Image (cartoon, rainbow, N blue to C red):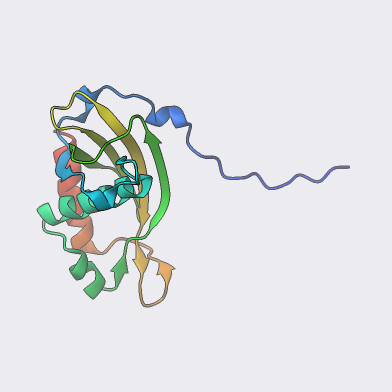
Length: 166
């Protein structure tokens, strides 16, 4: 008699990140970036980790645009660590290029906050990167996942949801 092993968590199909039309990226928060030497490898191609840093910067600026400061979240004891990250690199970005990092909050489920990203050319014609990130609200003092989002944060996130659905 064979014992059943617990099932492993499954990753979303990578097709979820495959070549969406750049027309799908209207109505998102936009964060412009110009590629600097420290973003690249020795060949002048953007290092993969730079894209992730740009996405985080875009997410923080998106939240700031609706009145949520990370310093304020820290002050009330809330942290938002990344618990899942999926990135698809479609084509490389090179030194000196200007790109647009587009982000939007896709869904809030309890204390999990899902974000979508696209890094595109400034004219919107070229798609370089697509990604999905999941954050979870963490009580900094206890080091445990919160039972619910702080009310002021939840209200502000509702503003983003309303913007995304327009």
